[in-house]
Image (tube, rainbow, N blue to C red; front, side):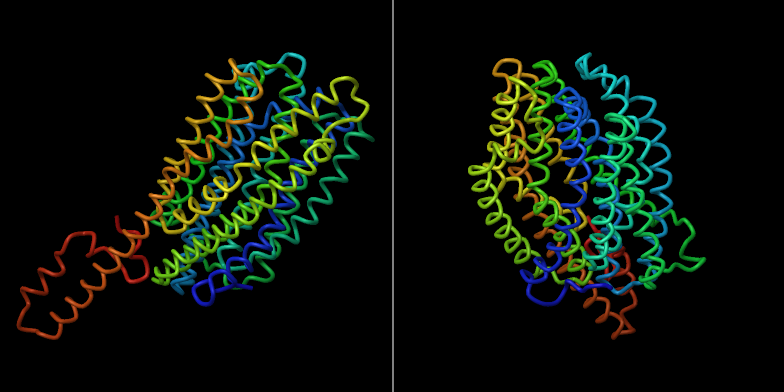
Length: 493
């Protein structure tokens, strides 16, 4: 059930890993997109705007959960690549303890504060109540979000990108059924859509837990391994928290932008909600490529095969370019048709305007999909190499770009400026990420060279017993070399 990404052609390995991950992420995006589609079709534009008004808050909190879980899986992938299975299980167990603590704190904090946040964002009064009901229930489901994403990330870090897909497919079907049942039969409105999302996420998480127990004996921890370890916990937080903050920092810009769009009226809120959901769905291949590169780079760094990093990144970027061109071409032909997925045809005179707004939004986003591809590929590659703190800096650039567009340009130029916000954020992030990636690879190679030189010097000193002073001086070398081990030289900084 595991897969070694340290040998073989990088392109074939990346494609083979990406495709199952892509299907899983497509199903995962269906959670939110199906909610939006069914709400828009069955409950109308007001309800669609109510769900859309919570999108940036949802991204802020749930994005942090997803990022933390992805970061927790990087040490697991590293130890898998190094062949240290016992240490790998310790990381998995400690990730579980940390996830429980994070989930409890975040659930309480967000549920208490979501009304205040909606008020601060100037959520329109005609959709405020429905927005609050929807996001409150979503935040109650944070433990389910942690359960699924942590287990799915761990399974993918072992090289198995297929298993999580099966349960996401099942839960997506369940989500659609519950959406229709709770909205049409039980008349729960937007609250029913939120309940369906949380319940479906919980099912997929429990299914992953059952599978880990039954089919992954490599993850069965002993009593010694299951204990909380401070060093493992610290390593996990160093990787996970920056990745989670990267999502959250990015989301702050989205909140500023959403607040500006809220000032334009509920019709424009609905248009950005529908366009945003469609864009996220179409961008799933880039998310899958990023997940593949995190595992690929993590395993190869753990195995010390640094020469495979650059080739893997280039091959994945080529895949991103091909898909970006295909997505833009498809939206040139079918953007209005896709917009109708979210809009009630009998919605009155606003229907034509709403279709036009959604089409403009999605065409602008897909036209800049290659910069988005690089954001995901390069950012996750850097994180897989062990430099997850850099993700916060790239997220900060995205935040600044969206905040500037939202605070300065949307009030002046209206919806047209809102369409430019995401492309501007992606290009700003790339200006930082691409040089940072080159620097990370160069630094890893330098650390490896220094460590190999240190090993040779120690062996030579051990072969000459008379030179005890030389041996002592070698042991007292700078901490960078002394604390570095064969299997994790990349942690030196």
